[in-house]
Image (cartoon, rainbow, N blue to C red; front, top):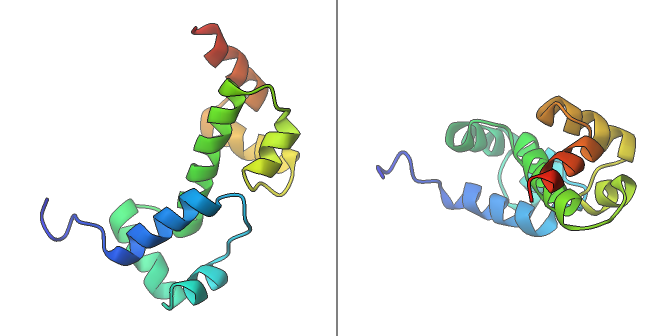
Length: 115
């Protein structure tokens, strides 16, 4: 990989943080303060190296974790929403449907039928 393609430590650190703390409330303000950078620097670097904003990236991490839980556990949609850092199960359902074009329960049913 060329130097331009390699993610800077800032982006890697924030991604690592998201993977460990996706259930916690995160804002650009708290992230910028935590990593000692401006919000603009944070957003610029994320857009450049991941093609999305830090908050969108976090949303994708949350959705990935939620999909794992939907398939591998019997937890309710509400429990999964809470475990994955969504403010409500309604909001989780809305975002999930936007991204996956299925409700969380339809997704669970579809994935489980593959086994």
